Length: 424
Image (tube, one colour):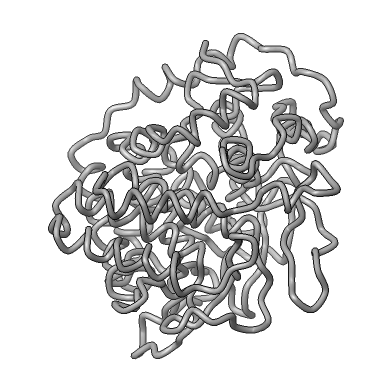
């Protein structure tokens, strides 16, 4: 196997011929009736999580839920809440929930975020009490989780378009002080805490950071300098002769920003990010199948490892290169979150899990977070962000609805334009 790490990209990457194929590759794929039925079942179940596991008074959504018991946890995640706001748009569009009920829940959530939820310079704490919004576990003011929340806020603002939702959503977005976050650096810190100030870690390598930088650059009230887009490193990886931009990180880093930002048919002076995610997902599939020599459950029918639960807790695992104590576990959101990139291969996995492993790997909220068919371990939890990426990418494959809705926001368009994106 070739070395995974080749170089840090400090100059534009040549636009290779295959990089021009991303949008046409996507457009050519047609779902079968069986595929569409499965994705509809998945989305309905995912939506139920975001409806039932939100506090009706605050709209905040649980970080995770035990689906094998009467879960009474009170920990909300602002990232899960961002996914929930987008899920409500999808559900209303598909008729899973009425316009009135969806709009009321969105207004409740936005009003709570705008008027009651503790913030610092417009940024939100990572974890909060689901009823009061108060900080939990001395969690940090999180830059990336705030960005995920804002993507949901902007999606809801664009979809519902009511004056109340528009005002609340705009107020929440415009008070975020991106320029405070970048006072002394173009590389944004992971967060801030009242006890210690800025965290020492920086968003400095390719990852889910793209949404955050683009939102900051697209802000009119407290913008990042456009040069911030060029500050983070794009590392070229090589897997058995296939090159792509990546990180020493789980597969989700190729998914989260692209759940909202539509990179199809666009590129900056470095690469076509949509095509890059296609390549990275294909490489991950090949990596898992190669691991089948050690863990015989991995095959063309069953692959996918990304940050998730496992038998001993929570772990950031995946590859290549191999990261974490990989033990044959499968994470459904790895394939589900990559549906727009490798539709046929990812659908094959989702069909396999649904039909072969049945209720052990399925719940009323959709796929369990992870499972290991070799050891017989099946998670009892679903996690909000993994349920969210599953629902959003399923809908993007079916209709492109999330992309189309989110990209109507002027902040998103401005961020891409100022970062130097152009169509091809």
